[in-house]
Image (tube, rainbow, N blue to C red; front, side, top):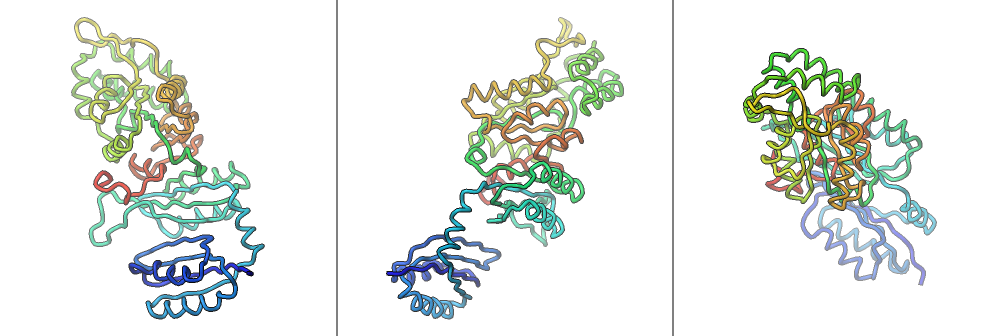
Length: 409
């Protein structure tokens, strides 16, 4: 018996039972299914089936498939695939696979062209494209519109550093966010996520809020901004700022906590992460009081931040208690929590905005710069600048359609 491969290509209006009707014909002739793939865009079907069968029956099979296609109103085509062509395809399956995620408030053709041009220039081939976000309503546009597409690509980048640089420029010039990750088991099994707090989970710097109440806002803000740009050692900047808070009544901390502006997407992100069993940590150069407030609000598992010293009269002394949580300490804590939770570092995620977040962002399996300072964005492999913090979900491979009521915006 001599066998051959035939690629069957089917396009047209999708309908229930279409694939079953095709398979009923192929099964009559004991056809092997070597590969199969389907995409469905607005009820328009594109289905490919690579079969191997006795060449004696191939003519009859194609004839019956053509009749069926006419009957149900679809288009069908056939291409012979030689043994050498098939083996070449099989050999390419061992190549590395990556996921390029592209997202923004909306995606236009120019942005998709730029992303796919980067892929092509690096000699990578796109195997699949998935829309991760729900469809945008034209008549009733959602308040928090976002669009995300995921490209599954095969091969090895010719120059990973050059690719990263191009993606970075693309992100800045076209107002989109991206993530380029190896598509391995760790990407699909993240288990621990560590967040910075100030300007990440909340849209303020708590030390600046305290400084305003103490009447030293301008002085503290100037030091904060210098530290976040990486122009000053964090420990030095922290010590100088805390000293300026001396004499402030501790009661103001409660009011600040009650009115902290939560970052867009945090509620949705936390709900889904907890539902999916992630361990969540706050690793902050800010203050424990505010971190514990968020811990109670969202059921966060770990909080490590800085403790302000309070005197017997309930006023800040201008000093702190214990070890400062700086960038080095954040990276240490990420590794420590991973060890306690028995999580491989490749399964960890770190999200932050400041220079003191870079060590943990670099250490984590997936490090994300969120609305970050230029120095942080330049050194991070992933960034989110155009949408809310729940954009992290798309980097983790979640589709809106997976999330049901939990994923409502």
